Image (cartoon, rainbow, N blue to C red; front, side, top):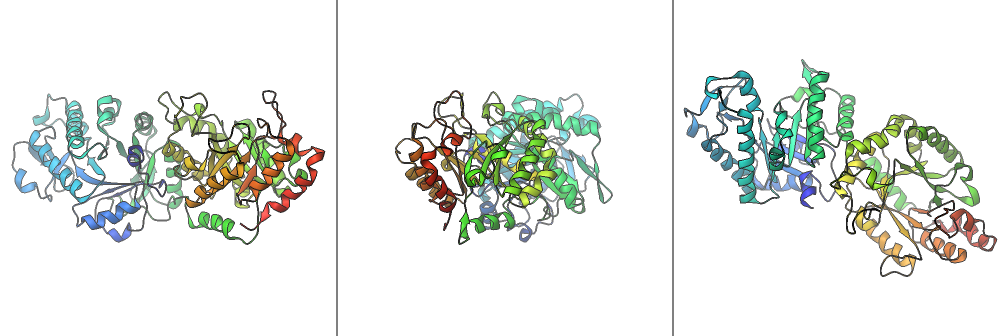
Length: 563
C-alpha cells in the first residue's frame, strides 16, 4: 500500500471502518480474528514479534502505545528516573507521575520505547497524554510556572517526530492523543510532525454505567479542530463511550460522515480493557453481502440487467429493458427517486442509483483531496431518506449506488491526476453506513476500482470512435476488464457508449450482445436521450431502428445465460 494508505489504516483487503484502542488486561484472543483500521496496543503486556506479525496481517495500522505526557511507576524505566528533579508528584491516576516532558532526559526514555516498538515490528507509535501541557497550565504547579507549556509540547512532538523519521523512515507513523490540547491542532508545525490524532469523548462520554451526550459547546469546539485536521489530510480517530449497539451505530455514522474513524468503546470497558464488541458497527464486507455476490456468481442461470443510463421511468421495461442507471441530485429529487423505485419494483427492473453530482471537482479541495464535508452536503438528502430507500435495496430493486464519474481521470484536471482511491473508499464506507447491504462503485475501470476500499463493482466504458489504447474490439477490452474485476472480487458493469459513438446501429447492438454474453453483471449504455453536443444516435433512437429489431429481441435471451 502507499504511504497514504498506511496512514489511514488501509490494507489490500479493504478499509476497515472502526479502530480499536486496547490498553489493559490484554487478551490477544479477543482481537486475533478482528480487522481494524487502526489498532493501538499497550505493547508491554507480553506481546512479541510473532503475535504482532499476525495482527499486522489483519489490521490496517498497528501502533504502539507510549505515555509521553506522564511517567508510570510500573514501567521498566522507573528505577532509573525515580527521584529525579524533573519527575514530580502523582497525577489523579495511581502510579502515574508528572514529568517535565520537554526535558532531553525524558525524550531519551521515550525514544528507547520507540526503538522497542520498531524492533517488534509496529507500524508506528501513539503518544498519549499530549494534553499534559493543558493540564499543567490549569493546575499551575510551582515547577511549571512561567513556562509556555503548549509551545514546549509542540517542540517536543516536533523534535521526537524528526528523530523518529530520521531513524526509522517516513513510513513509521506518529499519532497522538490530543485530549484537551486542541489548540495544538491549529499549529501547522504540530500537524507536520504527525500522521494522525485521536480524541476521546467528542459526542458521548460516560456517567455511571450509561453514555451521555457531551455538552454542545465542548463538542463544537472539538469538532472545529478535528474537521480542520482531517481537511489537512491527517487521520482523525474518535473514541467515545457508548452503552448499546444502537448508540454505537449512531456514533459511528457521525464519525463516518466527517471522514473520522470511530472507536465505539463500550462503557463497561471505559479503561480500554476490551475491544469494541464484534457486532457493533460491523464492516460492510459482511457474510450477508458476500453471500449476495456469491449467489450472483454461482447461480446456474442468471439474468443480467440490461438497458441504458438515464432512462425515464415511463420507459422501464420498454422492449424488455431490465436495468437502468438513474441520476438524482438535491433534496428536490428524492420524491422522484422514490417514485422511480416503486415503478422499477413493479416492472422488475434493476436500478443503479447515481447520487449527488458526478463531477469529481465538486468534492475536491484545492489540493486535490476529497473534502468529506462537501460529500456529506451532496448526499445528505438521500441519507435523510435512507429508511424509505432501504426496502428497495433489501428486495433487490436497487442493484447498487454509483458515486462519481471517472475518478481515475477527472475532467478539468492535469493528465495523470486521479482521485485518491483510499479517499473514495471513505465515501463508500459513509454510503454503506446509511444503506445496509448496498453495492457501491464509480464509473471507472477495474484497474482503478480494485484499489478502492469498500468498492463492490467497477464500471467500464467503450466507444468505438475512441477505444482504449491497444484495443479495436470491445469484447477484447471487456474480457480483460472482467477477468481483473473477478480476480479481485468485484462485480462488473459494462457500458457501450451510444451518443458519442460513430458505429452503426447494427454493429452497436451486435457488440452489445457480445459483451453481455461475456457474463458481465450489468449491461448499460451512455445514454438514453440525444444530446445536442453529440451527433450520434442515442440509445433510444438506436433501439427504435426497424432494421435492428431482430437483434434487440435476442437481448433478453442472451443476457440470461450460464455465467
